[in-house]
Every structure is written in structure tokens, then in C-alpha cells.
Image (cartoon, rainbow, N blue to C red; front, side, top):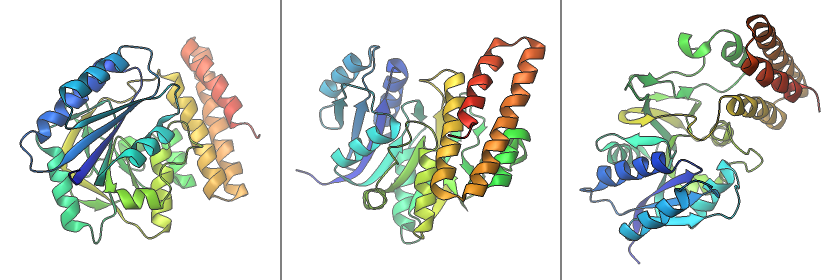
Length: 298
């Protein structure tokens, strides 16, 4: 069996057409590359056309596509761990299904990482919105001031939380939509925490990486489009973000910090509920009524 340089890990869930576009751009990007590569794609029991599409895609790309169909939705983190365990590459690229590769972005990431792997262990690239505007995708870790900025100050817009640097920069974490690393580092850390069903997996993973002395960098030399929230509605990511914050603080911070975090989350929910009631916005009312419950002490 030929040695594989790079394994690209993709998780699919009810995004058949979007996932196909992602695979098309991956294959086009690597068509003339000298890299020995594979895509390991796990479908989390989709009920749309994804299983049929992926089975057909594997048949037409037998040398590069390896498709695994789960009988139930295992969650994003667990499915990634499953795919990485099944991968054969020395290096891995964790890639969201709602991404589109521009030009030779994958090769650029590979070449930069290999050249700098003595000082870089994890890496993200520059994400773009559908209109090719920069998408904030690198950030410091969620200390209490950063969480406050995220919840109340539109931190992304003022560069307090997530940003999109124009030069290579060491950062706390990068978006899970695109993470490049050596397989051995991912395995050494135990992969994504499977207690997190969706959202905050990358923050937790890269926080644990930092604690081991590993460096995460943002590399803008490679660019990909990231659609975002392609397999979930607006309410779901908000609730999962609330759950993710609480889980992360329970795992890594003091009881006092967790108490303050819950207070901020409840205040955010209360403010949004009040605004929703005044403006008669059912979405705000329903979403943040549930979010307030999530923020309550267990």
C-alpha cells in the first residue's frame, strides 16, 4: 500500500450538494499535485441524498475517496476522531463540508506546514465568506474578558475575539472549519473531546495543545471559502455555543470563573429576551428563553 502524505478529514450531515461542491474543489485543487492524498469522509446518518451521493463519489474516485456511513449521528467531534483513526496520512487536514478550496490552497498549507513543522504544530488558513470577504477565524482563548466582548461588545468587529490577520500570526485557536496538523499530535491529544457534540471542539483541542507547549498559527497564504452553519438552524448554534462555553469552563477553569461565566450568559439571554419581547420577535424569545435555562446552575 502506497504511503499517504495527507489525509483530508470531512464530516457530512444533511448537506449533500454542499458536500459535493467541497469534494469537487478538493479534487480539483489536488489534481496536478505530486502529493499522495486521500479524503476520509464520514457521514453522520444523513437523511438527505448524502449517502447516495457519497457512495457514488467513492466509486468515481476510488483512488482518493474513502467513505464511511454511520448508522447514527455520533456528533462532529466523535466522527472526526473516527475518521482520523481510519486515516493513513502522516499529516491531516480537518475540513468542514461547507468549505470550498480556492486554487491550490491545500498544497500551500502542506508546504508551509512541512517547512515550519519544527516550530508549528497546528495551523489554520484564511477563511472567506461566499462574497470573498474575510471571515474572522483566529482568536485568543475565551478568558472572561474575551467572553464579555463576544457576548456584549460585538467582539469580532473590534478585533477583541475572532479576527482575520493579514500575516502569519501565532494565535490561541483557529476555526475548526480548517485545521492542519500532524496526525501524531492529534492522536497524542486524544483528538476532539467527544463530550462536546458540536461547537467549541477546536477551542478545547487547541487549549489542550497549548498546555502541552504546542504552537498554533494562522497562515493567510492559503484561502478557502467557508459558508458556515450549513447543517444547522440559527437557534441551534446559539444553544450549542452556550453549552460549549459551560463545558469548556467546567473542564478548564475555576468554580468562580464558571459562576461568573454563567452570570454573563444569563445576562445576555435576559437582554435578548427583553429585546425580543419588545420587538415581538418569536425567534429571539424562544432561543434565549432556552439559552437562559442552559445557563442555569446544574
